Length: 187
Image (cartoon, rainbow, N blue to C red; front, side, top):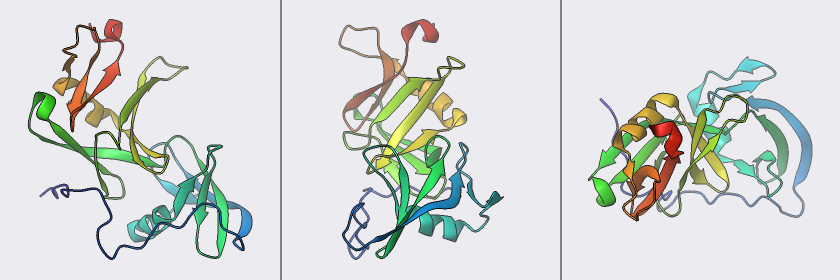
């Protein structure tokens, strides 16, 4: 049985506030030996972190600065971590409604739900090495989820050409049209 997405992607009442990236008195610990692989697997000293609750805990203090560096930040210290692509992956898609009225919600590899819309845009970039599309959805605070290939194929099946006379191909969610790729790749 698949869990249904929440009605809102806000943390809800009583949820702890996210710590700010910069704060006086916080000790910088340099580079932590943590890496997030392209598939969303977290590693510590080269070994996978197999406990999902621990990964969820780490992800709750994950931040990205303006320079693009990733940090784990606690109230007393912060350390840089390595991220191969995006820190999260979108592993499931739910669809409510259709066309312009559609609402697309994505479940991440850490079981958070994100509703695509103005605050959580979908973007697609072309991999410079392969020419393949790399789709992402903004999760929070400059942190994105790579939309995994099976989920991207679901999006492509939902796709339609924009009704503004352009030749953009994409999907609607929460009143926003998100282009999925170049027209010459869709035909």
